[in-house]
Length: 388
Image: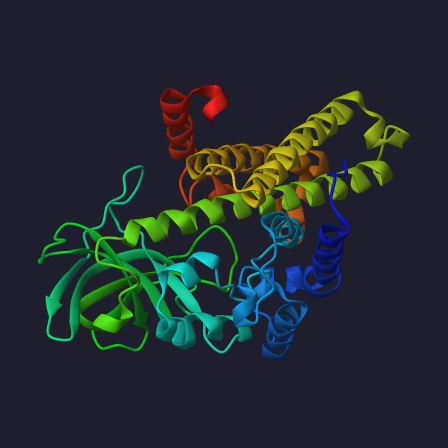
């Protein structure tokens, strides 16, 4: 099931695989049994090693000391990082190219570049209680002297418990761009920010998804990202990239599940012969392999399309296709492999059990599967099959 890759991409794939297999996977059960947490020294080691290997500078332009890797190389890395559970691969922050296009030089120096060396940590305050298939932004930004006052509430602020600043999206309540979205850098310790609660989720991550309120929170004008009214442009750019990387991570998770399930079925004896000799089991594994290959092909082709500079609207639709198919595929594979493990597959020490819980959210966040289907269908209606 090898995807054609050049030497540079293969090197990055191998580097990420070694990091996952030798540094992260051995700590999965420890994390699972301790609310996602690892010993402080171990977490610090993972964070430093990830930065040293270049994972936190993959999408950073060379003029800022980054690696400016091609999209296909980054997908190869994130596919391997997807093989580990408990969000242990979230041990580093990663500046994205859109940040360098949207942010001022001062913002890049204060907020973006410190992500690369790990001296700062970000989170995204985008989603609200009414958000869903439609983009809903009720958090307001009102003009005041020197900046804006933010009022509202955000849900699912992932990694807020580790972050020292937020990317915050709001809607302008006055001025010539009233009703338009804006995006800000907002320091976590700013007065008026309050943690409402930290809900418990199905997965066992040390990165929490907090609900936060903002009451007359002052953000300076120099922390506005881009122009007034341009917030959704940057949010869409982030969504487009993250949807592709979700597809990559789902492929990595699915590959590990197939490997683990196959190894178990080979050594598990049923009625005097290995479980893998049962045709029902073979059929389940065959379906897993077929679907994974399809998911990998479309994910890597979408990455290659980015590197070729294909039409942006086409790329938007392709990322939706990749995320939709890969996330749905990974969920089906997790279910089949859990079934092959039987009762063992229902134990938290088994990666199949953990992936069954963890992969479920990939069909929801950064645009639910139903939203991806709408994006794909609209692209078909507007541009035709060849235009997609």
